[in-house]
Length: 89
Image (cartoon, rainbow, N blue to C red; front, side, top):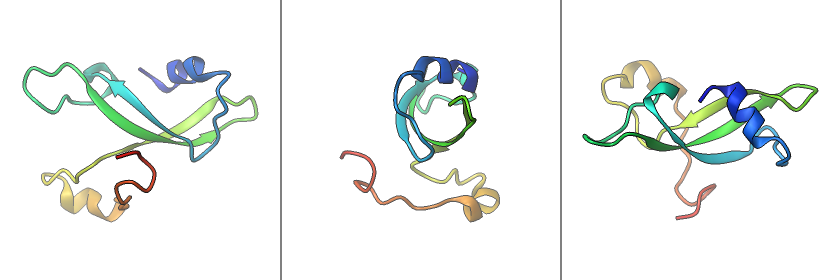
């Protein structure tokens, strides 16, 4: 699902930068399923912007763990969100 599709689906819901959503994503969305046989993966994401017409212009996926194959590259950009701070347990 691209950001434009997401924006259309979420119209009418009060959304502002910082809003957090949980969504099921698929390989066509650029997300790899975690386990063999899975066809999708549930991810959290944060809205990071919208334009003057309330069209979403950015979002950020939340990872539960750092990919160890990419740790040296992405670790400086990771921010810890303690479990329970934003999401129900």
